[in-house]
Image (cartoon, rainbow, N blue to C red; front, side, top):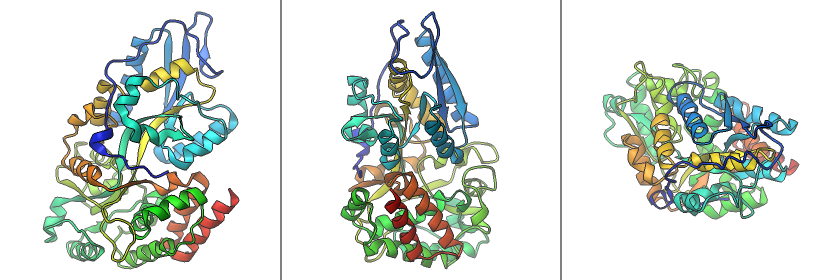
Length: 433
């Protein structure tokens, strides 16, 4: 469940668009086929405004133009609402034909439920070679492929170089002691040292995830993914680390009711408007921040550094954590048309457009050249050198355990929980299956 995704070795792309034969026949009972052989597919994604939303509209139109008789109906859903709405749709048997997927235990759950299409034999040889085994393998369950990656999203700490300079911080923190000193220096300037959108739970849990990445060995993380047991002392120690850090009051005022990515008052908005100096987030963050600056342009002084080392931790201090965003077809989707669309979106032109629209790292080596954001270039450099990369823990351990983990971390930060209660909540959710 944990995969080393070597950036330069695994980013690759398809070339030209995929064109369907005008047969109009597709496997499964999803979509909508008319008497003339035309097919309509529903498509859910999580970009509700700006260049990202426009990108998917243009990409769908390009696919339709290359494949007469195929129509794609798009529904954009706010990211924080996506998991719940998608699960409801899957369970009701009314799922979209094409939907977001992120691998890990969450994907394994829908595979086990028979809700997602096995596309192993439909992924083109070009796609397999272009994406590489590591990234494509993020959508593999028991040796079969159930989705196509579009972006690689390792995490770390984004920060304002201008606010660091104003606080006299001349180098990115590499240890927790140095991060603590940076927090103290930033408080003296009147800005929030760290932006946190704990209202959405998962951003707060990211802090626990990274402390666990530093405290737990790679073997412990992998073993927990198999056994779903969390009795190693490193899980409690990760909570203690976060509790100690939170006690220094590094987060923005009202962080428990702050959203992550919606509006100028969100944690990303605080960074975008120089109201806070740092945010722990994945590689989608530059694009989100850019959409929230006053001129809706990339933040010129945005930079990035890896999560600091933790003294005495058993995890490799250079290890990284992140995810691979992509898309899957529902079990009822028209198989031929749906997998053709998945192959299409990893083409070089589409991947370059994706990277530019979302200001992020594409899953394509050929498209990687369009990444010119300095922060993202630093992410990619660290990613290429990382000894191993873990999937986000709420993705790795599946929706039930992941949700319990995220909620328990917020409770601890709110003062109604503890490091021990985090482990207890996760263990209880795992025991329920």
